[in-house]
Image 1 (spheres, chains in turn green, purple):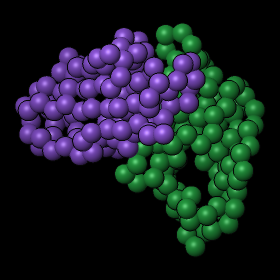
Image 2 (cartoon, one colour):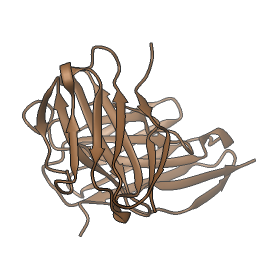
Image 3 (cartoon, rainbow over the protein chains, first blue to last red):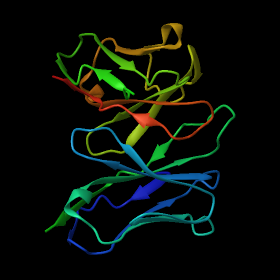
Image 4 (cartoon, rainbow over the protein chains, first blue to last red):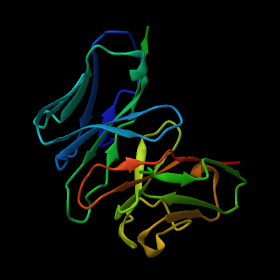
Length: 115
Length: 113
């Protein structure tokens, strides 16, 4: 069983739609949760970063973490064609110590927002 | 400020040959990471440098892979000899101090034929 499960999609939505992207995980040691966006032929770019459970909002993006269910989500409001990319969830067990910075990724969800 | 730079962007080699990938991190970033994405799979951690020291190399697949970071600046990842299953995209990332925000390079696409 993978440590992080993410539905690869693809997901296709019309412009303006609300997009919901999700990951589940099995390692209860994960405390830091990230969402990366990756455009074709580019490297992953950090979108959101959350520590432990709760919500975090940044513009049209909202990240949610539910540690009790081992479930994280990314919501995109008023989606735009420029949001079309692969969205990757990633997790880390700790900051500091010997394993900080080691990220465990989901497979990524391919999102297309059509005009 | 320049981002993380990787060379080459694409490499095609024959099975049994040697390939060296290079990563230039963001200036001042002590942490440097190598990751790999094999086709159809998730991005996987390979190893982590803090300055010139290997902090964690638990993700290195086998002893055909050798990573170095001389002087704590740029890093190289050598694959010798390359096998077909080594094909994939190799990413380098760097971060500052104990921050988890890692900046990724564009990746090197390695094809072993």
